[in-house]
Length: 87
Image 1 (spheres, one colour):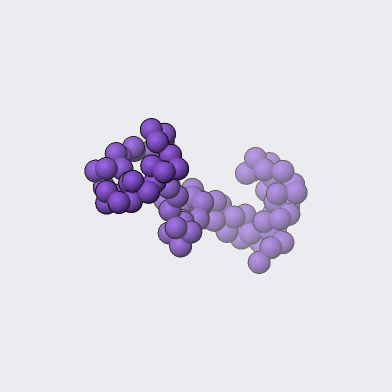
Image 2 (image 1 turned 90 degrees about the vertical axis):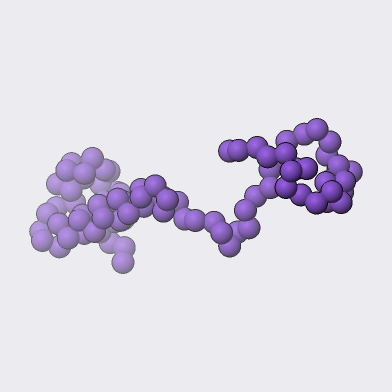
């Protein structure tokens, strides 16, 4: 996270108003919720998991057992069941 001096980016009146509540401290100003991204969308992790789950479902439909899939993907039997039985 990059720190920016408030006086460099905020209007003087706003800095003065903030100083009524906080002086010389670091504060975090979060993004608006509308700009949040879902987990893994930036790194590609979500796509990898979605691809893996599609592959697990396809293997299950082709006759692979839940135990076989759990061993192959190093996942618990319960996790494999959640994957193959959800839409």
